[in-house]
View 1 (cartoon, one colour):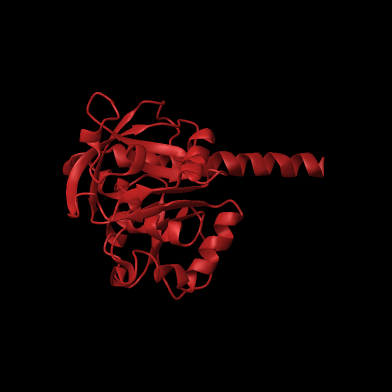
View 2 (spheres, helix red, strand yellow):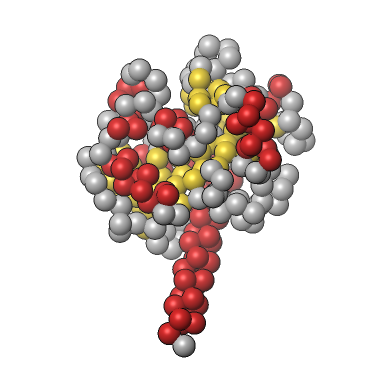
Length: 244
């Protein structure tokens, strides 16, 4: 199963993502340079963290126009799984694939710390095996990770169960003290209505090896594998039915 890890000029977590994915059984990740125009050979797409194009203008604002993004948008709309971490989340919002925006941390300071996130939706392609309320220990490293959305968008996100993760304390309580950046309603990660696109500010790629403090991020990658495997089995079954 092949994952594409997109490389923009300024990406700095692409190697983390490739290492994390390749460290899991049955998975293979490859770098895809931003000037490429096709992702047909891949089963899933990962937009890593970093500072794409130096984060000039706004985070992700220039990366959104890279040649590869036409393929990302096309494949995403066709149902392929897309994961955006940190800067990748910002790019997804700039590209219109996810609602809302990421703005400066309320503290106006760069935050680099381990956070606890609470799983709000257990039936998404990215949280299989994580019952609702599961706590995931994931690191953050960002200066513009404060998620913001207007009232109508926020209402839609909650109504459609699109909020996948919220920052919480060690007891699973969603409290202001657990919020590292001031994100509205402690939102750490969201998906689109179709649930095949997931953006989050924490780094699952930096929490996929017990030697660096947490294996919780690997659960997200494994969930993607499970989703793709189930989808493939369903497609095969439907083909057999059509032939019969």
